[in-house]
Length: 335
Length: 255
Image (cartoon, rainbow over all chains, first blue to last red; front, top):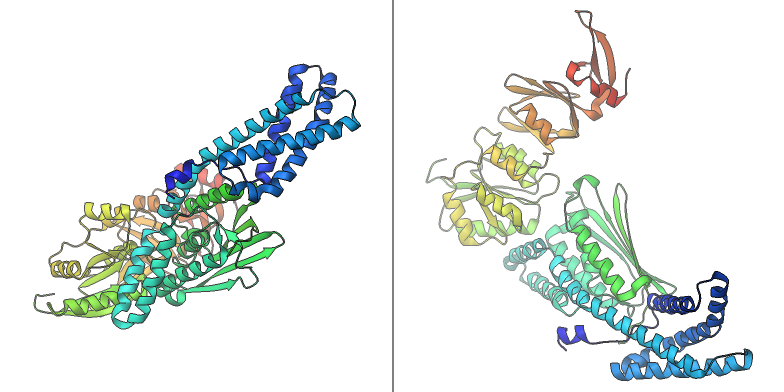
């Protein structure tokens, strides 16, 4: 599938994402408020009107979200028009069910078709909103990928690595071969379509290949400590997340020092969250300009695109070390 | 150096593979012109220490190195009695390359090609020496060290150790806790370069803010009072000129 087709295709939002659920809640309740305001602006009457509306709308809303979250995977397998039709059908069913349940509890309920109209209206507006939002973000996703390609892997790294490989060819041809293979793997991933989540195991392997190339030129100045043994390798993370962070750590933490420095990487799962912790030595005065903030901004942006409000990235700089802490939801990937 | 004698080359790069690569290339060049490797250094300080002894004609100098970058090393190299020709090596420095071209500074791009290295070395004997002011322009950031030529060797003075700088005719006296050196630089330019570290207490004197213990009032022969800077670890007191009186208040450390 080409990038363009993909970028313009409509998809339903992920109904299991907290950010999406929040948006739906806010929009529907906002529309309730508008509906109530249309009838009256007198505060007391407005409250009553809102309570009346909520008595039916809230159960429909909550039940819908539960059903949609449950049907999320299945809905996403359908083609978009069918998925939208199914979605509207689900909403009709939920509304009808709640209406008839409401009849047995409340008196003075309006006609069912009024609720149907309201439901179709709200569902239509929401689908339209998420479609527009998706379209607005899609090019951003493509661009984020391009940015990842351009901003990541500093040209310096490529040219210095080639120099390192050239220096090995005469003395240690086998090691030169391995280094070229690592370099090829790295660039293959870098140039791939990096919009889908990927298994963390592969990302860790890639990060290790990257570090072994750096080790080639930096020698014993670069020490690495991995602590990812208790991380399930099937967890999903955005691709090219670790490598740019490690490159930053090498560039800002190791290269400006003549004495050896250690990069610590700890990846672990805590409940339904994956924690990625990266620490490198750091000296305030040796700060090199540019680069750093761009990489972090790019990662922050990609985390937001993939996980909305459910992921976080935090950096802490002390006198001696610099730490990046990323938290993302634990998603299990297929084989 | 005279033609016919081998060209002695010093290799300076913090990355061992880069040094190995240059060594390989130099041995290839040696098939066509007489070349000797004068030595290898993994950082700028080491290179400066080796330079007078190793009698290098050419220094292949990496631009990006930890602690002291190549552009600063090149400035200190110019303090030698007979500075060798400097050829910079760099992997990628978009803006620096333009500046190199502008000032006709010789450089080689990494990975270095045999042909380009050979050309650069062939020209090395006739190349015009680097100009200090051009180097200063290439690297506007403050140096980490000042340097003096002491009996043919380069002595580095860490800027962090400097207590004050005092101008005296053509020279500037650099005073550290232990020693005193004379350098041939302009006080105004030094003030500009190390903005924020030093404060001007007198038309001819810059004092390191960190080295100031406080200020003291003294009465001159004419009966008028003026302020003196009291230094940490140095007995000498420096006069604050009338025009710079305001710094006493700014520091707020009256003794």
